[in-house]
Amino acid sequence: MTPSAACPRCRAGEVLAVLRVPHGWTNASGRPVRGVREVVLCARCDAGHPVAGPLVAYLIVHEEVEPAQLAGLAPLLRRWMDGARPSALDEHALRAEIEAWRRGDL
Ligand SMILES: [Zn+2]
Image (spheres, rainbow, N blue to C red):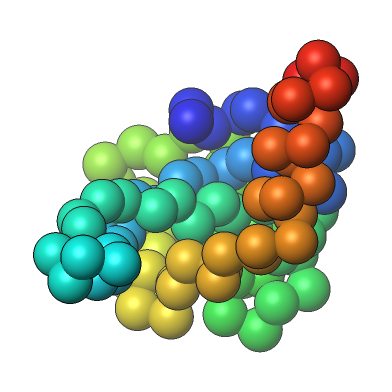
């Protein structure tokens, strides 16, 4: 996913940043499965969040960040990254998408 795409949560907000987090689980045969999940920073969904909100405001005001501005961005980015966790898998939504795919709706 590239920034500026539509948010996968609200399907309307602008994606300002994407964090890729290592993710894994143990499958039914007991083997570890490793992958990466994305945490999206959305201009709409995250604007009021106590940790992500200041980063959203910063990125909206500063369309481009020059090297001289990194001192202002870095603490906001670090705080968001430290607290960002991928959302849990919504098995109901997954099953609904699989059924929609089978019907040819996707
Ligand atoms: Zn959103």
